[in-house]
Structure formats: C-alpha cells, structure tokens
Amino acid sequence: MKLPKFSAWRHLFGRGEAPADCRSARLVAVIHCILDQNVRDAGAAVFPASNWALLELCRKHGVGLLQMPCPELRCLGMARSRPTGCSLREALDSPQGRASCRQTAQEVAEVIAAHIAAGHRVLAVLGGNMQSPGCAVHQQSSAEIAMRSGIFIQVLAQALRERGLEIPFRGMRDADPQLMAEDLRWLSELFARQP
Ligand code: SF4
Image 1 (cartoon, rainbow, N blue to C red):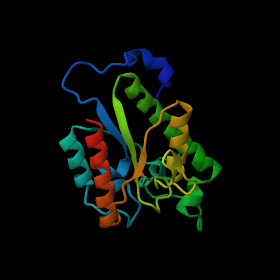
Image 2: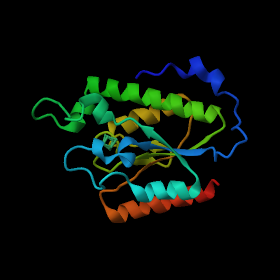
Image 3: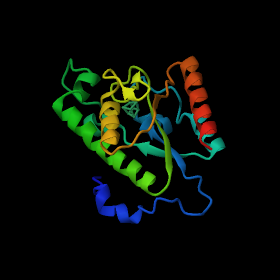
C-alpha cells in the first residue's frame, strides 16, 4: 500500500509532544524478519518465529517496535524470483531493485518522521546479518553507513538524512550467537542511556 506523503497528514501528528498517557514514547524500527522469520529466504531462518530475546529486551525497557517491510519480499516476492544466475544482491542493486527499495525506504522514513513530529523518540534502526543483500548494516563511521551495507539500508539512511533525521543503525546479527549477544548488549546500553 502506498502511504500519502507525510506533509499531507503532518497536522495529525505535528504536536511535537507525546500525549500524557501511559506510552513510553520510545521505539525502534526493525526489519520485518525480526518479528516474523517466515519472510526469510529458504535456509536463512534462525528462529521458529521471532527473535524473542530482542523482543523481550524491548518489552523490559518499554520500547515499541516499528516493523519495516521486507525489501526482498516487496521487490522479488516470497520466491525471490529473478533471472537464473542473478544473485539477490544483484537483483536488489539493479535499477528496478533500487527503485523498489527507495519506495519502501521513503515510506518508512515518512512514518519515522511522523513519530518524531509527534514527540516520540526513535532510538535506532535495527537491520540484519552482515551478508544480507537488503538489510546488512556496515558502518563507515559512527554516523555513516558503508556502501557494502544492504541496498535497503543504504537508501533508508539516505531518506532519513534528507529529512534531517539522525538515528543510529545497527545490524542484529542473529546468524551468530556471539555476535547476537554483542548486539543485544549494545541495544541494552542504548535503552539504559535513553530512559
Ligand atoms: S530482506 Fe531484510 S527483512 Fe527481508 S528477510 Fe532479508 S533481512 Fe529480513
């Protein structure tokens, strides 16, 4: 579904102060498969359903989750349809693949901007494993995403930059239990620093 431009509905969210109810007004944007491993390519799921350790950490700290659409699913469908011999990375890095990722990234950036305009804090964008063609996060510097990151992550970082939004990115590297533990520690420290 194509969302209307943020500017068209900004008035609904533009108070700049979160309502005085029980909400924590804190959230993270997460790649689709953190909540639903069923969207992963064949052989890539590492949990039966969701990354419960990450969800439990969010629950413990009262942090909400914004589920971003899976860029592979949007561009290539569940079967990852593409010409024979074409890798997933090549398919997403094609003009058509990049256009699809850019469309998804613009929609996500609009929703993030709406949250921020409503006085909510978007603490991080949580991506995927280091080899993920769409969602890998590789840092160039503390503020910059490297070109070897996933195609969706690259264009999302750009879409947020264009809106003047600075949000830290981090891959949740669930394919390796040791790296996953490191990433959960990083997230836990981030939540503790931003109560
Ligand atoms: S493209 Fe991203 S959201 Fe989709 S399954 Fe791969 S890592 Fe998850």
